[in-house]
Length: 585
Image 1 (cartoon, rainbow, N blue to C red):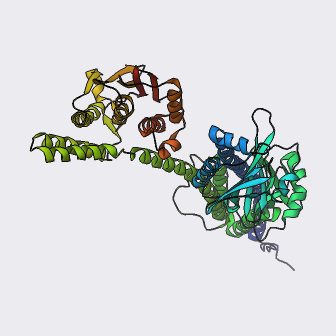
Image 2 (image 1 turned 30 degrees about the vertical axis):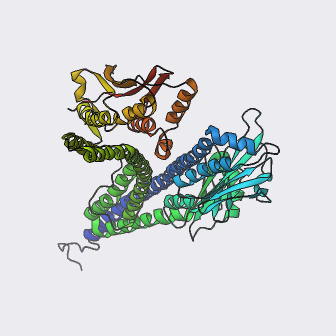
Image 3 (image 1 turned 180 degrees about the vertical axis):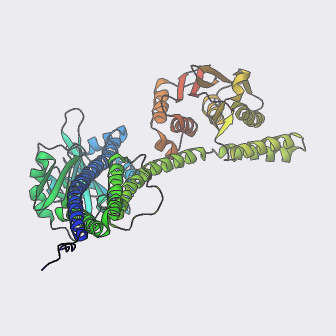
């Protein structure tokens, strides 16, 4: 018989009930949190990767448009050369021939274009009227019959533009531009640049963030021009060409288990089609999802504290990376220092940093190339020194030494030494006006000895202007020009007037003489030579002084600054130099 006072036996302990209850609640909460976190993270990264590709292809379209603009500018720079355009029109007229001088001018212009761009292998100029062609290569130039070399152009749709058309031929890109007669609009010639295909392929390769994606370029006839594809891309050129029209309708689409992004460049002269397999996004995002699930399992086993810790470790860097990618700009982007994560998030961040840095390097390289070209032009212009003056000075010293032992020899030698020290020191590009005038005094002193004290110099400068900074060696070439061309054939005294004034914040310097002057035709020719620009200044064999000074000022200041010339027969010549006023301090 049971004892009524005995304690009841515990059939089930409360500890396992609490354990299983708490475990059930924690598991439910963790699973819910994990589900929504993974879903949100997946969608955010998915959308961000797609947006990055949109940004990348937009930048690529702008980059290619800039490249095509440079080639278009090269074509039009050829056409605006009046002498060369006249040679082409004469050659491309019915029964026209290409004379030696015309051929030399055209070849010189084509060689100059190749010299400015190392990616150009050759340039062909086809006579569309006479049927012959001028081919300029780096090894030489030839004239031969066109033959069937224009078969690709003959099949072009007449409704398409002819300013810049691009075709692929072997390892080269053919950039075609048709030249028309200005008066009637009739086609005269076709200029074709043979450009290395690698010039575009390098740009496309830099835009690919993985080996499994690809970029295709098509011309305005939807023919393939260039491509950069990875080994794992399940798409070839024929399939890309088939998807081109569909992608062009909406700008982007999904097909063949891939994302297709379409953009046009250079006013639809090039069509860009970027292909991103869905597997690329799935692999990147899937790895991060797997990390999230493993972290959730570890959180269940490690209880509340570890689950919170793992949640923070996983969520925080993903959100930070998404914010970083959302607000990143190429101009102000800084990858920063610190230790990179070693998981998939770190891989994604490193890939994004690499992509932005590549874009920055491409932009910096383009601007650095322009700066180096500008510096080289300035150095080349400053290095043009007329040697005849030095020879004449040495003749004076020798003649004086033979005739008599006079102290003037010492003075001439000192003045010549000052001139050489000033003109051959390249440490300073800008000097005060007083130094330029001091150098000019030494120069004119020697010239006066040479011409029997016939030169009369008048200076009209306010003392406050002597501290103005001007480019070195800009007055002496103009004075030498007056002596050589304006005064050399004039009898009596030679008068040279130097002046300077401030006008609306600009410094205006004048060099005037009472020489023979020039007629209207000669004056127009010199003004045209000055207006040709920097390239003409470097290659000029005559009028170096005026062209040199004008080009140096235009390179440094641009705008409306430079040299202007006025002259009349029998009344002399006046040269004006205008530049911004700058002071020593």
